[in-house]
Image 1: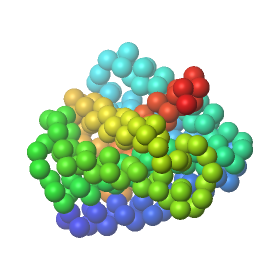
Image 2: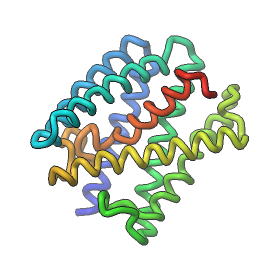
Image 3: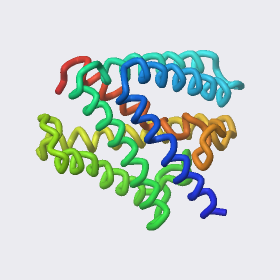
Length: 217
């Protein structure tokens, strides 16, 4: 059973992740279409898991998704360097998720919080460790940008984004648990709903988008 779920998770990731990167890279138009689809599907899932909840919570969640959509559009931009940076930020989030999943499954250990029973302290360490993979890959590919340098400030940014990614995951888990829902949907086999897959990415784009918007780096 566990193997079948893991296999589904891998197959789904191998299909949808490259497709998403292609749509992001191809043009601003294809990226915009992707953002619109993500917004409407995520909004639907958010409304569904909070169908018995407070209308204010539902509204704030949709407002958050709108802001993230705007920030994602702005971060991607039109020039090559901004696209490379945008994908880099997404890769940090994805790598953090993978690290948490692998370390959590292998080392298990103490539970991090009752909100998300699958989260462990070993998973947190795995997330932090794996989140450095993108900066290593970008350096091996010789991308020239100050944010890809091996220095303390960039390492701190990576650690912050990895932690933000994990907070995003736990936040959505809280609302699922509060409403007695296991997954936000079933659109992605092995993952559940779209929100189950991109919860951390949404929070990472939100925080990094604000950092860039206010020229903090």
